[in-house]
Length: 308
Image (tube, rainbow, N blue to C red):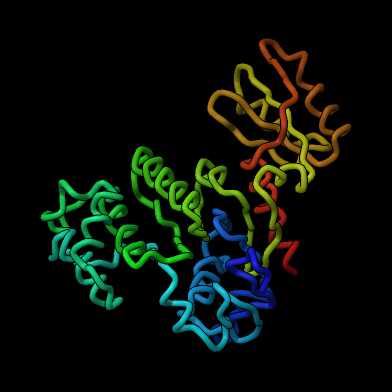
């Protein structure tokens, strides 16, 4: 394992009967990075996370997580990893404090009272410490789950769609805390469907049907996908979209509020297509850089062909 890689695995494969959930996947995650995992439902994100944290043994592959062999040292990996599942999995008939005390005892930690107090303060839970977990809103349950993941001070945090179903403010607060952990050297592997969360990540991998289609620093993704984009606005966006979708050079048209983003890989053909609607009354067009959202819409459209 390279000295600065917390996750360094290759060839990871997991089958469930005739289904290959993860197929020959490699991951290289540097220490302290926030590494985003994107892909449609059923693409293999959760299975990959479970193999990385030692909960599932790969059928094939090799490598190391936190310096430990991913095939033979799963217990050592689990002890140094915090894993937050999609579903809230703590005890709803216990208070916040009781849940944290219970998790600390499971890890056989010393100074349980001190650790619990630090966790309560760190995640802003101190004022609600006596409240039953089952009475918390989604955002507060999320904070509690994160506190439970971090109480043993893991070096690697694995988050499986951690903000699904919580409000935008709770999501922002959550990401502020993840960034603080990153600044303290904690490495994070997180799966998400939200583009505003994807931009918080230092690196992003996109997987579909168990195969990794893209792995790149976030700032380089749009360029690597090789897309060009134009913004088109005007009356009757529906008619504009239909006209543009039928034009040569247009890979797809996505609506963003009161405007269209018209996207394609052939720069010259795309420009001709957009120019074809410029003369319509009230229409304005403007060249824009292709962003993450356009890149991932394109990857989703290409996925079935790319994994054949």
